[in-house]
Image (tube, rainbow, N blue to C red; front, side, top):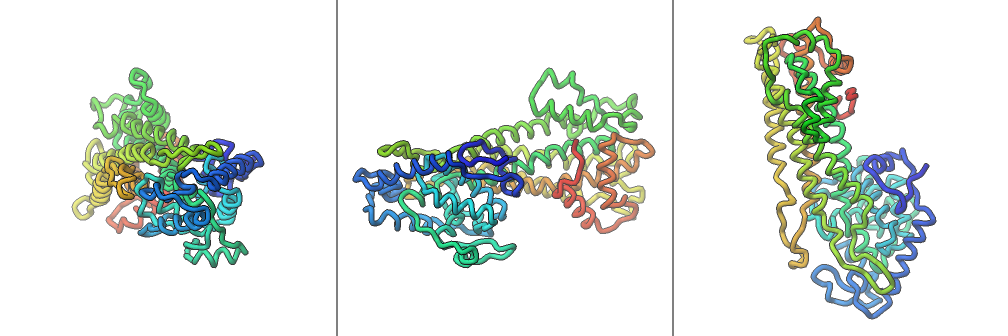
Length: 497
C-alpha cells in the first residue's frame, strides 16, 4: 500500500515512515492532473497583461513592480538565490527530508502552479537521499520559512549543497553523479517553493515523535521513583480523576495504576502512618497529564498544517490568484511555545523527584549510599538536573510573542515560529538527560527495597538499567553511568507499556 501525495492525508507517523523508507509514497495520475491543470492557469496569467502577485510582479515591497514575460523566469531564479541567506550549523538531514516530503504533498494539492517536472525532481531527491544542506537560522516564520526553503531548493537549479553521508558537497557535483541537469524555474515556481511553513512543521513533527516517547517514559520514571520512595498509589485511582476528567490526566492516572499494579513493594506499606506524598509524586497525573494535553493540541494542529497549502498566492482560475497569508507560521508557533512549556515541566517535576530520593527519608539512606561521609553517592547528579531544568526554563520564552517587521514593512508581523520549533527540540533533548538521571536514581532506590518485588514492567526496566549501570556501592565516576542511561533513552530501549 502506498501513500498518495496530494490525495491522502499525512500524519506524523506517515511522514516519518515515508522518511525512513517504511512507507512508499507516489504521485498518482489524479495528483498529476491537479498539478498540470493548475500550471496551465499560471501560464495563462503569466502571458496576460494583468498584474498578478508573484507571477508577473516583484516580491514583498516590490509587489507593485510589474515584470515582463521575458524577465519572469530570471525573477524566479533570483528569488531562490537572494533568499538563501540562512546562517548557523545545518539542520539534521532527517529534517531536510521531512521538509521536502511535506512540500511535495502541498504542491500536489494543485493550488501552487508549479510544473510536474519540478515536483518529480523533488521526489527523486527524497527517494535517493539527495538531501540538501539547510542552515538552521534565518527564518522569521512568515512569508513562510523563506531562507531555509530557499536553501532546500537551491539544488534544483544546480546551486547550494547536498549531504553525502556526513560530508557536504556542491549540488552540481551531486547532480552530475546522478546524471541530472539543473532545472530552469518558470513563472510562480520560485515563490511556490519558498513560501510555506515546512521548516517549522518539520521541527514540530520530529518534536512530536520524541515527546510522545518522553511522555510515556516520564510516567515510568515517576512510577519507579514512587516505588523507591514507597509512595502511595491511591492518588491514581479512577474515582478521583473521573470527577476532573481532563484527557491527559485520566490517561496518566491509568498508566500509573498499571505501572504499579501487583507490586509487592506498594502493598508492603499500605497501612503505614504517612498521610500523603509530596506533589511531585502525588500530582503526576495532573502535571504529566497537562503536558499530554499540550502534546495532543500541537499534534492536531501539525496534522492540519501538513495537509494544507501554505504558499502564496493561491491559484484558483485562469484569472484569479488570491494573495493571502496562509504562509504565516503563527498557528504552529504558538502551539510549539505551549508544547515547549509542557515539555519543560516534565523535567521540572522529575528533578523534584530526584531530590526526594536523596533526602534520606522513609528507609532510604541519605544520597542513596550507605557509606555517606566518605562517599558522596548521588549528591551531585541532581546538580545536573537542576542546571538542565533552569536551562529549559530559559528556553521557554515564547518567540511567538515577538515580532520584528521585515521587507520594508510589507511583512510587518511575523511569527518567529522557526525559533519556537528549534527551541522545542532543544528542550526535549534536555528532557532525555533529566529523565535518564531520575531513572538512575530510582534504580538505586529500588535496591534498598529488596527483597520486595515490583510490578513486572518496573522489574523489566530496572533490569534494562542494571545491564548497563551497576548498583553504586562506593563512589565512582558517574559520567559514564549517566551517558549510558541517556543512550538507553535516546534509543527508546525502555518498556513503556
